[in-house]
Image (cartoon, rainbow, N blue to C red):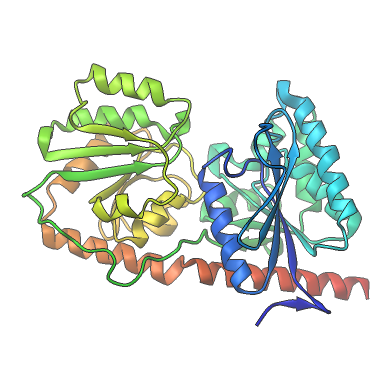
Length: 397
């Protein structure tokens, strides 16, 4: 049944600092999936995002999701020397939220960085519930990053903290970070990222360990925080030669340097680079292990996708990992920045028997199905929206 308010469906204004096709990161992909799942529940969604390139359409739709892009020169979450883009974004977003105030019911901001400031302020003035989903915990905690901005950082952080109705934390670490700055538990909501589950039986094991190269797969942004040079150097230290293959899928600032590193280590025959793909199912179907050396995450969408396909993870223990992977059961976990721990995890993966891999694969798939199915996650979001709206109506009655 569609979720309705009086005579129309519930309508969410979802705000992101970047969006497809200008960025293909995990937040953008996760938001697209959530929008589609919300639509299946009868919720209307309008995505509001920057428009950084003139060739990008100002308005379009993906399925039933409307996308409105506001023209700025740089991503509005950067600040600093790009403060002009933040101010332009703030003015345009505030005007849009005011002009369309009768059209939407809830403001949902993806990540609590600078781009969330005008949304929180406008939502407060307009009497709309404001949901802010945090993107990072620990050293890269969203609100700490905002607070450390030289121009107005503490003020902007306080504004987000004060006017946000509900914070969404997708990991225990992020929930703890919110508690540490004084956000009460009543405003912290533990909602995980969601993943689309493959059809039952679609993942078919077509090899036995020892008869073909062990296939490691990374897909995501090629940025410094992913620590991909460590991934490649550790793969070289493994010394597996033709017994292992690493596939790196994505684009980013580090791509050229990583290709050069592979060449300097003589790994061209064992490490391949592929451009981003909209559907990674073919790659996951052929992979034996998902690998990540990331130094910072919120809750990795790539990790969830891998587990949903029964691909065990060799992954650094960053925010969200302990909520997803049980070390030695559904994957292999090492400490971020630990070269020896990473290589040891690779060695353990290489030494795994086919029976052990099958057990780990099944555990990974079961975890994704039980805890992270996107339909279930969307239902929990609708429940949150409904409770916030009911509370707001009761407060103003």
